[in-house]
Image (cartoon, rainbow, N blue to C red; front, side, top):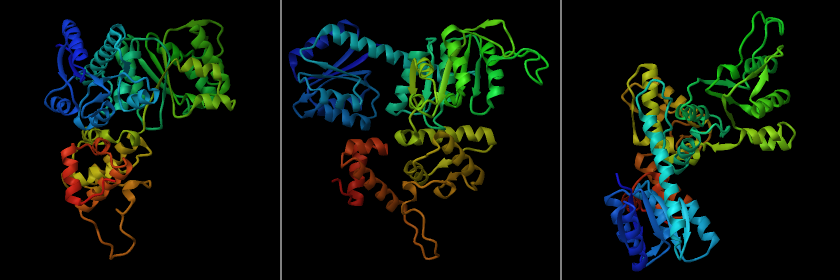
Length: 452
């Protein structure tokens, strides 16, 4: 299928030049000279790539970037401008532009940028197809359409075929082992995926678990035993909570990373291995290194590729999709029908910060399904343990005369809070709320909300 390209440029000569160039490259190209027509085209069809001018007759490229999330497009965007403005470039990238090209257009630079973007898209699509394949060995897929999770998917695709060491960093419950398993799955390794939690085993036993031991090496060592590094031959060794590794073991791990060899505890024979190392932590190992609690040289060795997993509170647009997917998973595990999630329950889920991330969300939904007495998940079934925005005004005072609020009142308050958070920017508000611009406008009128 041809790559679909939308050119938004009011300079007719440049627009035609780009049209001819990319049609010669086999692209399916559409052109428009203003934001209004561009939005109409994006509403009618999808595009893989957008070339977006900054200065247009009815607005700016920055304004277009701000509104793209509400248009539900998954297009990559290359901004084009004649202004050499560093702050403008930074703002464009922050709003989701993939690249930033200055005018006059250098055709080689533009072609290189387009090829790089399309290769990244192809890799990401390959990961998505593999994740959705119904194979028993396929690990749980990443769930989410937010920019942050799409970036994680791209990084998985880019690093999967490499043997470089990967460090996964993120809060507890963000899915670090899921990502590690996906990297292994898409790497094509013939060996196994082996995981070990460095915080769950005492130091003297952890050394044996990692490197193995010989018979008689210590009390209770009645037979020789291969360690995780040996067992992970031709595969992947996942070292979870790597920041908890004791300094003596850090030195031994550093040697393995440098030389791909080690000795078993109590042994003298050197063993070689080629297991790929993926480590994970919720801590900043470089901050620990500055404090003397982690080896700086090991920190650099572990983080050749560094992937950050965002917490749920930074990707709330993924919550509805994630909640529905988890509900199906829980349904299979506890052998109960999945519940339909009410709008008010989704509102409560979206208003909560989820400090325990995906793990906490899964636990809350499991509790809700166990206690449900109907086919609908209602807000009262969600037992949220921590303070959150959902607590504000939603819990009645401790007296019997408390007045419960209607769903319209809850919705109106939440939309108003989002508008305040976005300083009245409707495009950003639509992105957070997961609704279209016309739907937001109708609700603003319905509830007489303030946009300022």
